[in-house]
Length: 255
Image 1 (tube, helix red, strand yellow):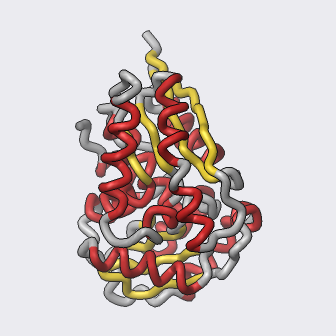
Image 2 (cartoon, rainbow, N blue to C red):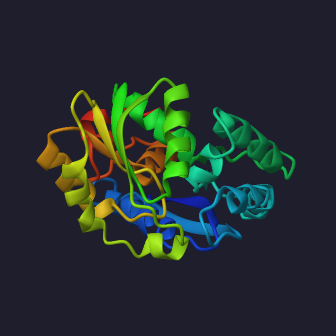
């Protein structure tokens, strides 16, 4: 008997990647878990330019989005904007997730809420990594906020490359295969893992396994980490083919 899962996505209004990569990964599970199927339901927060001011204003809309999605009785909600969370200061992902869970509960629903920011931290720790090198599409001041956020979460950032694209639509148009060359330029000495895209808007899925195979290091992204947490909260084995070590069979432990 096939089981369908409803996945609610809280996304910036200009995000064009979350609703591409997350469904792609979950549908790729069909070859391993044909009994599963997924539908995807989104609510959007206004944001066009990745600046601290716009991100703060956008984050205030996340409660509305969670409330709207709880009307659809989704099985899990994912807040998909890493930098919106991390720009609010260390530890904010926990505060955000708790608040949004309460919004959902107040609407007589019990769907768990994950965030891409919290998921990235959990994903890095799941790999046993304590030191990482990262690539972001952000302007350098925002990248520095990501670095600080990870550092205060017990994860040392060895190196960070900022592509410095402030227009969120342009971020979504970046060629993911260019990440192979960017990854080669990263200082990876001493790193336990590489975060190929510390942003759910910067496409990276087609490059993840290729970069991991080339570097010989675990490679993850904000999107693969988000899928990892989605699956764990659905009590499913967090396995997706060709999506890096975090979602590989050897890493999979059912909740």
